[in-house]
Image (cartoon, rainbow, N blue to C red; front, side):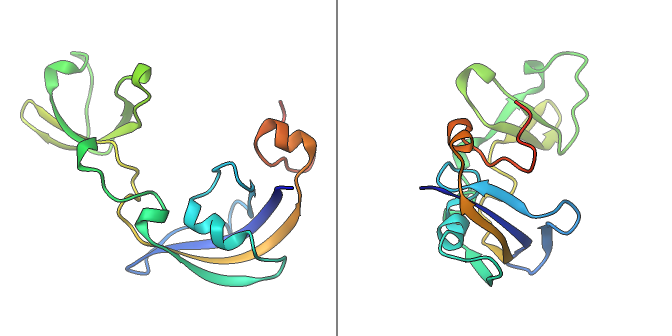
Length: 156
């Protein structure tokens, strides 16, 4: 039966820069096997027990993937609404009907806007310093909903 696993973490990149940690918002809790966390991390965590600590190195391919050059596109300014204020770093959906990822504006050169649909951490090898805080069997409700519930349920 799938498990619900909770863990504290500090996430760093290959330059040892801290990208995120669970200190402020509490442990991350997920339902095993439904894609709630990156594959390379889940593969290592599922064999761990409460209290276990480990540094897990996840290569880009097992994290948010390698950079896909096909997701970096240049479009004309005229493809945006006339009154749109575009800035580097803005993120938006290009066309929701096609199931495309969100795109970020990465360059503005005259009338050409360069967009990147890669995840911000694509191409990055990641390091997770983790401590397991919870391991339990998933409830029938969690399995039906496809995610872990905290104390008091999930509100739907």
